[in-house]
Amino acid sequence: MASGLFYRMGNLYPLLMQPGFDPRPWGTQDLSPIYPNHKFGEKIGEAWLTGDECKVSNGPLAGKTLSQLSQQYQQELVGDAARDPKRFPLLLKFLFPHEKLSVQVHPDDAQALRVGEPWGKTECWYVAHAKPGSQIALGLKPGITAAQLEEAIHQTRAEEVLNWVNVYAGDMIYVAGGTVHTLGPGSIIVETQQQSDMTYRLYDYGRPRELHLKDGMAAVKEHVKSGKVIRPAPIEREGGRIRFSRLVEAPYFAVEMFECKTIAPFGEEPLRWPLVFANVLQLPSQSQPASFGDRERWLR
Ligand SMILES: [Zn+2]
Image (cartoon, rainbow, N blue to C red):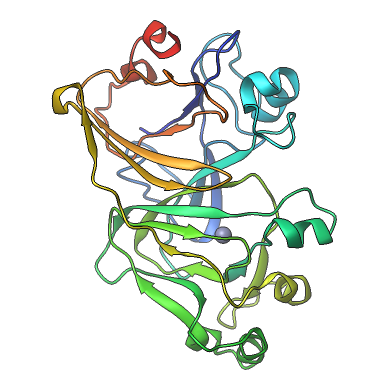
């Protein structure tokens, strides 16, 4: 079982989000070990935990969408640092690539402003599982220009100019807006990103899906600060019963990993951003969200 769970102080309580399962041609019907007990009749590529239309499944707010709650609670829910107090600022998903995804790019903040959007889309990927040989593409090979990328797209050989990287379970990869990127098959990814719909498909290996070349090439940056993040040594707390690592910190989000053998005292520091929790480990089938800890402890 996996969950997106977040809270702020005040009237809100820890919210368990129903995942939204998104069918994709590159997905799979088997989402274990993240969702081992679900049966799907079609291929699922993404499980959305904090999309605008994701619904709460516990407590008095059960059935409300995140969009409704963001409008209603504003900073109390979305945090003081969110640029739009009426929109939840983070999008968290599990990705289940079983075939190659299309090659795409999201604009950075500056490019998004140029096309009339409030912000861009920087994201990061935590590799929860990876089969041997799993790869991603991140940016262009050294020396390749955007013009050469565009030429390669027209010649249906863009994969040759991309920077392919092997990935392993435990990797954290930072994908700045403007970075050409894609996922190969064989991994399970926890994706954290700015809440934005702006994705431009640049290349699809000759498959017939629509491309967005004009807008996409305008968003492509040749030089980006994207790549694997060096993982810090975990910090032990509570006599080693909690191991904590900050995997990445960006202007838009921080992703931290907790391995807990005891109740973790989350929320003891002031929060500028909402906290979102995603379990990447298989839990016993009887586990309930309350297994995170009693609410008083969570909320102080
Ligand atoms: Zn992306």
